[in-house]
Image 1 (cartoon, rainbow, N blue to C red):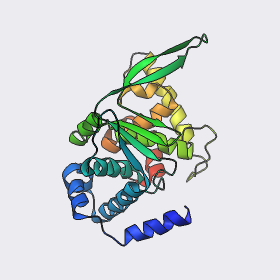
Image 2 (cartoon, rainbow, N blue to C red):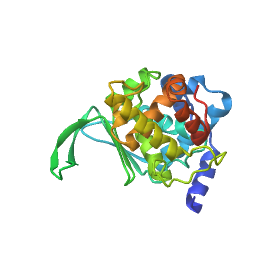
Image 3 (cartoon, one colour):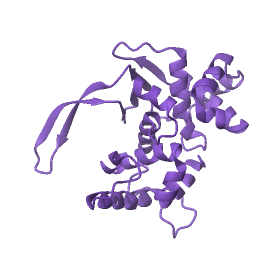
Image 4 (spheres, rainbow, N blue to C red):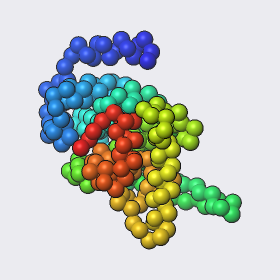
Length: 252
């Protein structure tokens, strides 16, 4: 972390989260209301850092107010409570549309034919340091915090993947026991198992978007783990074990 960022954070630490922002957390963020005092203080600190270090931009006529930005920042910081990332160091900007938006896509088939077009999206994450969100989707997730789907957790998982290379096969993340699989090995194994089960007509316990590729598998599993930890613990115990160590958290 650079000297300037360290200095700015020390200045922020001298000021408590404003009563207005704390009120937003109490009203809008159910996980915050359920946290113990230590995690609450940590989330307030991370939210202050996030608000200070990232830029927010409304798109497509979206008007961003303090409540929307604080809610997005706080949700983005919940996965970081265990210290997995120093506030997404590669993330610079959060773009927010009022609802689903159209985005161009290009897809290369196995025969080499490239298909291009436009598709409706609710969010995406770029390795160039940008997250795009649909506020309608964020709002829905705030009202349904236990349904296993959360666009902010999902897109922020991609940022963690960019930062750590968590889904890379040569990922040399710490192992508590060399005989145990590391995170990337576990993800690859569980991903292929999920795809094979789906090919045999067995639907997954999570959103089937997880079968898209290993990166989406990681993101879908992350959002489900934070919202429905018992589901992941029971249906994908190896993923649960790996995530508990990687995120250094127990969301259940």
